[in-house]
Length: 66
Image (cartoon, rainbow, N blue to C red; front, side, top):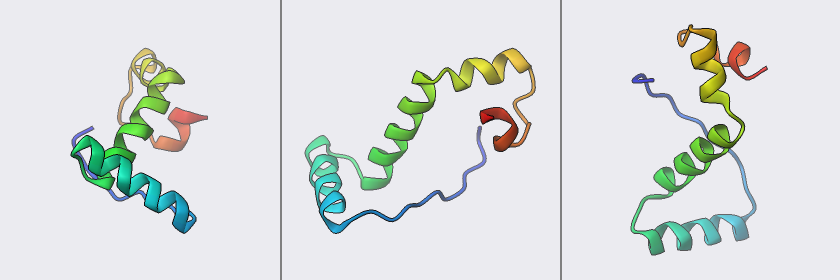
């Protein structure tokens, strides 16, 4: 998982303001805050375990998640 790409979304202004405040409180960037949320959600859904069981980390993301 060393290659990086950008993932983005649109949210209401109020949500952005909340995320900015939370990230600032934690002393991290908005990007890091959202990255952590995504990773925590994938972990809760056992996505990483599924990938390891398949034994092919280089598969496309669509195949891994579906």
